[in-house]
Amino acid sequence: MAQNSLNLSQKISHSWQHFLIGRPLATADAPHQTIGKTIGLAVFASDALSSSAYSTQEMLVILAAAGTASFGYATPLTLGIIALLTILTLSYEQTIHAYTGGGGAYIVARDNLGELPAEIAAAALLIDYILTVSVSISSGVAQITSISPDLYPYRALIAVLLIGLIMIMNLRGVKESGRAFSIPTYYFILMMIVTIVVGFIRYLTGTLGTVSAPPQDMVPSVVQPITFFLLLKAFASGTSAVTGVEAISNGVTAFKEPRSKNAGQTLIWMAVILGIFLLGVASLSLLVGALPSENETVFSQIARTVFDGRGVMYVLMLTATTVILVMAANTAFADFPRLGAIAATDGFLPRQFTYRGSRLVYSYGIAALAGISSLLVIIFQASVTRLIPLYAIGVFLSFTLSQTGMAHRWWKSGHLKPDEAIRERGSILSYDRRWKFKMVLNSIGALTTLVVMFSFALIKFKDGAWLIVILVPLLVMAFSSIHRHYERLASQLSLENNRQLVATVTRNRVIILISGVHQGTLSALRFARTLSKDITAVHVSIDPDESEKIKAKWNKWGDGIRLVVLNSPYRLLIEPLMEYLDKLEAVSSPGEIITLVVPQFVPQVGWTKMLHMRTSETLRKVLLNRPNIIIIEVPYQVK
Image (cartoon, rainbow, N blue to C red; front, side):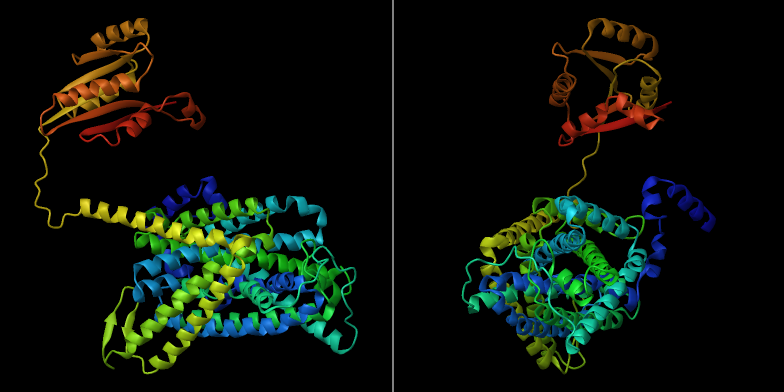
């Protein structure tokens, strides 16, 4: 048996798809595809870590309206973002241990708040993952064009190519893609530490200096006053830094056992590193006098100031930043398919999203994410500033639902007896003696993220956030429609409480559709004889002379089976046949069925398939909704 499986795997892996994404993996290999904390940090934390490269810039873009004097607010705003990061980290660490099956905000909302909040959470997260890919890839391309400005006109094309590369890597499997992405992730972490440390050492020794020839494309000619609204808008833009915090809670099942412990520790590592990076970049941007720009990123200005120009260290730093920004899309590629599979299992997305490809990954989810993200990048021309207003609203909505759901969970826990446990769909709920503390923590988190979400929606509404405000309800409506369809289908297919007797087939009228008399026709006739004795050959006549030849051949080779010729003066195939079938159905008795047998050539050479009509496929589309009509294609292999 093992040898047979090996031979099958070898045969399958000869296709070009498997050459591209790797040899197929057996279902039994799934436990061996899990990852540890080191690779887990690279897979799930790259989104959050990479945001340190652009979140400060997005704050400065807003503050620039009040002039460079307002840039001093970037540091206290960053401290506020770090405080928010701390609250979210503590909360999601609890979620990881409570819901070891993954799913994050969707599962928490489903088990504690109901189906509608769960659908809203799923819609918000799926949109966020799409935008994560679009924003992170676009930001990575911005770093590339900072190094080589000549590539700026091709930024959308470069972004689409990078999305395709990430898609292929993820189709190769979580473990393999994680190993490949761990090297650039740790390379970025190392270079970030070097840049921050060298920058502060040079500042303390008085040798840091300021940005030479800073870009001026975003310096306003008229300076507006610093207002609370402006600061709130800057804070909202900067909160894009925490959008990847939920990723690990969604992908707990990707970790090795004990998976909740490993996932929780990875989350804490990520939060600590991200906090240090955010504060370091924000401080250095002020020390060197960096200015926000579409032509050169703030991070590029920091790097060339810290390393005295565009030398080797500058290129290494910008290369590391570019790679991690591209790798940040991998977090979405790791989570989007998993969430899609869970939602599809519950009947809110097409069942295809539950399908695992040859490398044990959710291939349909990966392909869907790549396609939609590429479309967004093309529409917005890979502009981070234009995409950012769409970003973060969805994830903060999911944050709020997750925190609210966890607060309700702890409330339920506090009302259980110490020895009582309840099995819910996504976890086992038991009494927790610290339920009050945890409930308060999650309540604070829910309130905080709710305020940020509404602030972001109001501030960024006319800049493009209106699209997300509309898109989330539309997506929820789509989920509900899909769910209702699957429920109706399950009800109709169910055998439970089914007292209706299945109708007995009393007669099977077999119709062989022939376009000529040849070996394929006779093969179909031999098959038809196994179905019924009531057989009729039908030919749709377009050319009278050709029809006479077919009649003559059928009289010789048709073995006494009657032949009906349908005249088609307008050279149509389907319409005369449908009219004939209508007449048969009109005189049929209860329990009668019609089986349409269609001979079909199957060429051995792939390109020659286009030389033959696919009549059965056309008939299948036309007759699919007609009851009591069955279409059978009888293949006849030809060279």
